[in-house]
Amino acid sequence: MAATTERVDSPLRSATSASGASTSAPRLALRAMSGWEEEHVQRHQADTNTARLCNEILARCLVPPGEDPGAARRTVAALLVGERDRELVELRRLSLGPAVSAQVVCPSCGETSDAEFSLDTLPLDLPSSPRRVSLEIPELGDVTLRLPTAGDQEELLDADLETEAEQFSWLLARCLERVGERSGAFDVDFARNLPVGVRHALDAALQVAIPALDLEMAVECSHCRAPIVAPFDVSSFFFSN
Image (tube, rainbow, N blue to C red; front, side):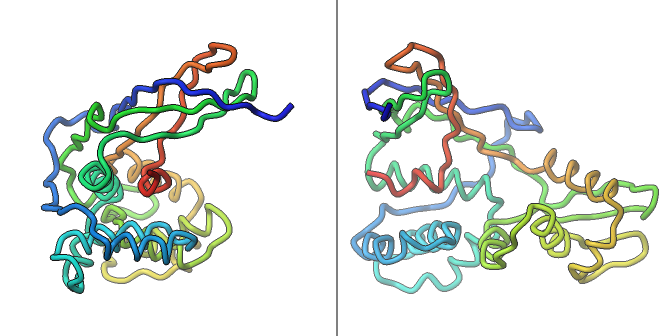
């Protein structure tokens, strides 16, 4: 049977970040989107690299309408991904208001419900995070990695890598700054040559350190009344009306 659609109200909730810190990271001085940004979105909304579109729109909204973003692109690219997503939520609220609609599929009955919620109820505090993480790996010694940024995410999507392992090798090569006595640039083959256990330890260290804007929609199915917890993907929902 084809899924039917009914409307339900949905609160948003923010999952607790790994660090549990309460100090907020700095915010951007954004203006609301103008016709310049609306046109850019419509020209590029079918692009597969959604990170590039989100980064570009944020950068454009840091300068007057129609002005080339210039250095503002570097400002956005340097944000951690969670920080970038938080700014997207704020820009969406500034530009189109707080009301957002989404469709969620019930895992119990398979039917679809329309969910409505307000961004005004969304807590957007993120911990002020250090940009680097250091740990000791017995096989390597002291290791330092910088945290991945919005710019890294944009370039990673351009790399068109098929598997998570390939993507992680690429990211490690970008983020490794020091391994034992060696510092400087590391290539992808260096990351590939690392033992799997070491790679998992580095991945775990990054996941703990990265501040995440981990949002979920908590709804009740309008058909079978089952509770649903659905992820709220900021990049996917940002340009919805």
